[in-house]
Structure formats: C-alpha cells, structure tokens
Image 1: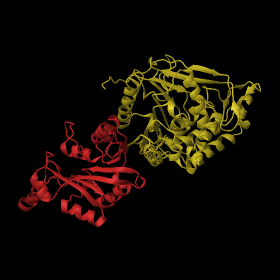
Image 2 (image 1 turned 90 degrees about the horizontal axis):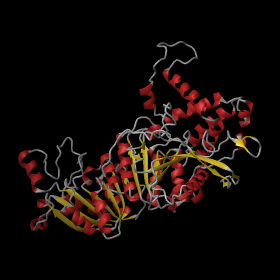
Image 3 (image 1 turned 45 degrees about the vertical axis):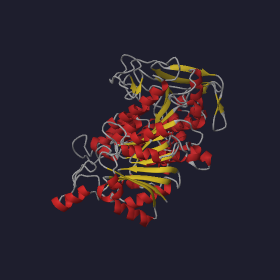
Image 4 (image 1 turned 30 degrees about the vertical axis):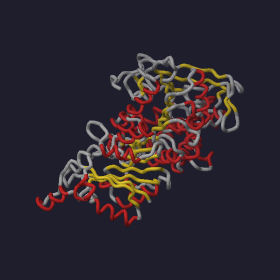
Amino acid sequence: MSTDPAVSETGELRADLDIISRWIEPGARVLDLGCGDGTLLARLMATQGVTGYGLEINPDNVIASVAAGVNVLQLDLDDGLSQFEDDSFDVVLMTAALQEVRRPDLLLAEMLRIGRESVVTFPNFGHWKPRLSIALRGVMPISRAMPDEWYDTPNIHLCTVRDFERLCRMLGINITRRHMVNHAHRSTWGMRLLPNLLGEIALYRLRR
Amino acid sequence: MARARSSNSVGIVTPQSLQVAEPLPLDCGKSFGPYELVYETYGELNAARSNAILVCHALSGNHHAAGYHGPDDDKPGWWDKCIGPGKPFDTDRFFVVCPANLGGYQGSTGPGDHNPATGRPYGPDFPVVTVADWVRSQRLLQQHLGIDCWAAVAGGSLGAMQVMQWSIDYPDALRHALVIAAAPRLSAQNIAFNEIARQAIVTDPEFHGGRYYEHGVVPRRGLMLARMLGHITYLSDEAMRAKFGRDLRGGRINYGFDVEFQVESYLRYQGQSFVDRFDANTYLLMTKALDYFDPAARADGKLAQAFAPALARFLVISFTSDWRFSPARSREIVDALVDAGKHVSYAEITSDVGHDDFLLTMPHYVRTLNGYLDRVAEEAGV
C-alpha cells in the first residue's frame, strides 16, 4: 500500500484534516482506523489534547506512528473490532480507508457501536471526472485521490456520495455534517449545491 | 534524532554483586535470605539518574546480557544484538542494568549455592520463586543504584512477564514497559511442555531428589531432554524445515537408532551444551515461575483490572512465527491495556525463526525498538 492519502507529502496538515480537527472536541478519546503515519492523531493530541489509539496494518506506518509518539496498534481492520467495548471511545475516525476494507457496511456499524460519534472520509466516485472517465473514455478513472490502476489499487469498495448516504440510511446512521472538498482540499459553493458531482473528497460526521 | 549506528560491542564487562542481608518475602509465604544479586551494567548513569533501563532475562538467561567476560571470550551476552553503542538499547544514551534472577545458575543466589542454614547446597530446599518475587528483588537493586524511576523496563518471554509485573507492582518506578514475545499467562499446552521437561529431570536416576551436587553427579540426560524439548518450542516448523529439512548426517538411512537426521544431531548438541552451562534445579524453578505467572488471577480473572494500577506507557511486540507465545497472546495483553485505558502501542513483526526471534534483529523489529526508544531517550533528556 502507498502512503496514506490523507497525509500530505510535506507533512502539513491539509484543509480536510483541519476540518476534521474542528469536529473533534478537546480531550476526546479517539480511535483512528487506518491512522497512517500518525500525523492526524499526533496533531489532535498536540492541539486538542485527545487520547486514544491508531489502528494500522502497514509496518512502516506503524514504525512512523511509534516514532511520532502516537499509540498505534498493528491490527487488520478486516479482522473486525470486536475486542473494543461498546461506547468505549468518543469518536471513531476513518480517513480515506473505508474504500479499502472488505466490508465497509459492517465496519461502519462497528464504528458507531464503539464510538459515540464517527468521522469518515472517502474519495467520491460520483465526481464528474470519474464519471467522464468511464462514460467517455471507457476506462477506470485515475486521479490524485485515487492514484492507482484498477488492478493494483487497495480501493476495493469505491462509492459515491449517494451510495454512502443510502448505506447510512439502511444502517440507521444519522449524518450530522457533510463537507465536500476538491483534490486541493478546498471547498467551493458549487460543491455545496451538487456534492455528488463536484466534490472530490467527502467528509462525514455521523451519529447513531 | 540522528545518531551513529554501528555494530559496536560494550566490550569487556565485569559482573557486580549486591549482598542483601534482609530476607526477601516470597509469594509462597516463606522469606529468603540473606542472598546475593549479581548484575551487569552497560553505559553511564546520567547526572539526573533518568536514563536507566532495566533488562529482565528469560528462562535460560542470566545477568550477562551484553559484551564479553574477557579477551578470549568468544560468546557475547544473550541480548548483545540489541544492547550496545548504536544498538536499540543504545549504551551511548542509556544506562542498562541486567540482574540475574534468584534461583538461577552461576549468578544470583540459586539452588546450587551453599545454604548457610544446613551447611550444604540448597538443592530442593531452595524456595519456589515467582515473577513477582524477582521483581521485588529487582526493586531493591533499583534502590541500591539510587534510581527512582527506570526510563524503561524491557524483556522478552519470561522477561516480558517481569516487565508486566513491574508495571503493576511498582507503577511509579518505570516510565515505559517493553513487553516482547509475551503471554499474559501460560496456556495448558505451555504448562504441559514444562511438565514434560520437569519430569525428564526429576526421573533421571542421577537427580537424587535434587541433591545431585552432594553425589558429585548431574542429571545430564534429564536436563538435556528438557532442553531439547524446549528448543523445539522456541523454533517454528518453517525455521526447522529451512535449517534441516530431512537432511541426513551420513547421507543415507541406516535403519538404526543412532543420530541420522541433521535435526537430531542439532537437538542433541543443543541439549548437551546446555547441560554444561545450566542447572537442573534452576530449570525446575524457572519453569514453575512461568507456570504460576497470572496477574489476572489476582484481579477476578480480569487482565484489564490487573493492569489498572499501571502508569507506564507500553510497547508490546510479537512475532508471526512464534507459536509458543503467538501474536494472539500478545493481543490479549494489548486488549486488556486498551480496556484499562493505558498508553500502548503494538507491533506484530513478520518473522521466520519463532519464539527466539526476540533475540534477533529483523529490520522492522529494530526500527520499531529504535523509534520507541528514541522517544524514551528524549523524555530522559539524553
């Protein structure tokens, strides 16, 4: 797997992570699923005084998280989260990992069992560029948010904003906030009007 | 933090000794003493006395964790690969302390030593010591060295059990706990292996009820069998296949019961060389300490509750090819620490060798230790 797309190469916190930070209350107990090199958790620890753990499968990312002083647990999200108690975290986060897991539906339900609240981000497959790539060129799209070829991508469950919201309804999950950004992690007026067509990355705040 | 890496050794080291007159209260209800604690140290204690790391040894280990005992000594200490200048337990930054546990051989007071009460070797009179007893004695050593708080306590296997016990019994006396290749308690299978090893020893005709010293003999066959059995559990099936396969020593099958397969030859060599450097009564004591370790038992069977007093930050490391204490056993520890709300990181190292992997230096393992110990050093101000 390549580096966590939620973390910029320069190590600066991007606009989408900035939004997530604002959604997390100071002192919250946080579980970060697919924490990458620990950048987001380290930042949340420093600025918001959160405590908690990151889960990560890639050994290099585990080492980077350890070096960053983040509590990281080398576990596979596909093995499930049954070891975590109900309501044991304030927030369960998952940035840019939903599309990589075997059963996003089961994991979402687990996230909201463990946490009072969840924050989920994913690349929106309903954006006009992937749509055009398939409609006009007839090939699977490649973009900054989805940089891999169809045959070696870790993204096995790509979805659109509409797909995701339909799943949330089916699971009885309440969407309390939605925020769309483009590949530069900026938000525009158009994205608010037509999120599924114009937003490249979707950020959601969820509750039971 | 950048630092030079090299394969440097701590060089020639001399064991030190602490004589303790005050008897040590033991879990079995007896107290034991006077006694001697033998230990080695590597590196320098800083002025703030904040850079000391305690290393706890496993079943067959002792105080000699790194370096050499003389210019002609060709075998370094048991964790020499990880302790030394530029190594994970970097002696340019840390003051590393490794004591021999009570009941051991050629170290701290053990069953082969002279019992002042009877005028003969302790033998079977040596009390059954536990992990908590050892930790209690290590605490005295810490105080003797003038160290209020270890920067870290580290160990693998039985050593890792001592690390966990430290975090529970003396929460404010350590800042970090490195729990490597561990289990929260032995499984029935683990205990079964230990029992076979013990039976091999006590049924050896030369065991003499543990008083073999006075008969001028050693239960060689029993101790050798115990070690051969133990050694199988330290290696993975894959490692044995890779190392020996079904290779024959003489190139062909002889239809007899002499050593034919290379693996037989290897095990016999391991067993025989062990007899020369280890004591049968010590083997019995060490395996009992393993069997009895169960911190959850004192907390209504709940491991998370057992860890409740702990203040240390934990690093738990397991190895994928370890079937003696598999990664699932380490995850039990991690789950309990998470439930108890403790700071913990967990790394599962892809490995080939088995339980003994904790003594080796796979890149991911070393980088994990380095990444963690850099932070320990930073906190210690070194």
